[in-house]
Image (cartoon, rainbow, N blue to C red):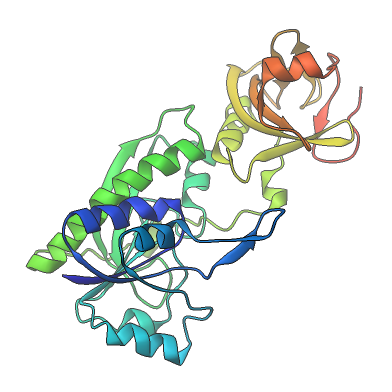
Length: 315
């Protein structure tokens, strides 16, 4: 089939690569405009654009998907199908263009976790299973009929970054199979049950604050569900501390005020609402990511000091 691929970040590249390697005709890719990034404000390309340029694929980078000239250019490629992976919300006048439809790859088992951050919320909620879904686009976001789903187990210490990478590769396989099913006419769709839908809204800074008042398991899930980005944070003294990896030490033990440092001698153990966790990796404000051993060698941490959501920690 003649395809147009729409995507921007690293997550989308395995799907583009597998379609290219499978011999499908990629007429063009649509990706985000070039942006200036970093201290030097150098112009950088999206990962999808980088792949396209390396393989001689035409690139479209509209500022607005509703721009008439962009839509005319898109239609001129006469693609059979649009493949969308980690891209913007398409207006109906765009996703209705190809005769074989437009489908999206979503990083959850829809209708569970509709929204912008399905990977983060799955881990923050402690799910033991995740997966990917391909579905035909319709006007309401993430509600189209399901074409294909692939599932995977989620270990209890897996981080969002690790699940992201796994689902990126799993999703590529789902995208390839979906294109093949559409091409040979064997795609059978299943409507989503809206009554089973759960949200996965965009995550903001306040969402990332470590909820020390919750159970150790919930705190641990919160930390791994936001690691490495945007990262769970807590205030310790007058500085912010990002916590990137943890381990549940005790599930039920009661103790001092939630957020209290229980031990800081070789292990940084922190009290939760019930139980406690050990901090394994962290990033002090303005510093690089480090192990807890590196942190404790460079910073003085008093037993009894308290981590919290804001302000100075108590002692």
